[in-house]
Length: 107
Image (cartoon, rainbow, N blue to C red; front, top):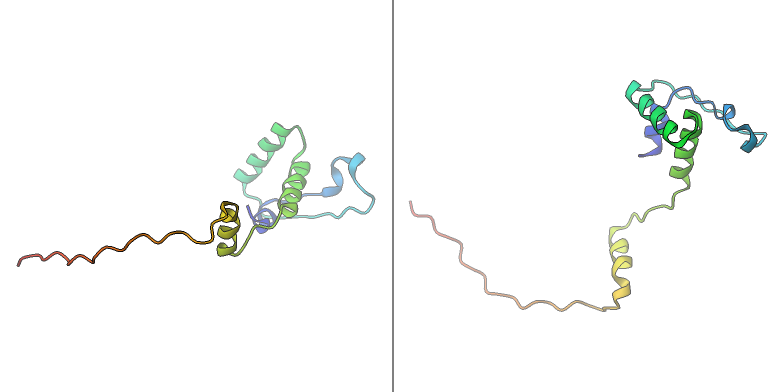
């Protein structure tokens, strides 16, 4: 999910309240309002599965999202990179066939 989605949905998250042993002295706080109840429930369940608080889970989600490698925005470059290992300069062009006449529908 996009970062703005997280920022709009997660409410009242205080980054300083969790995992004090791993925090640095100058950690920022972030408060986000208008959290949908279903999203909060899903976040609470996800945090429980990972054995951490909701705040720690949100920090993990945001860190993974923001630190993920940037995906290729140019489709042509992405396709070229995907197939460049085949070492093919060009693909053979299949022989063309004669164009068929369109069907005639009797009136």
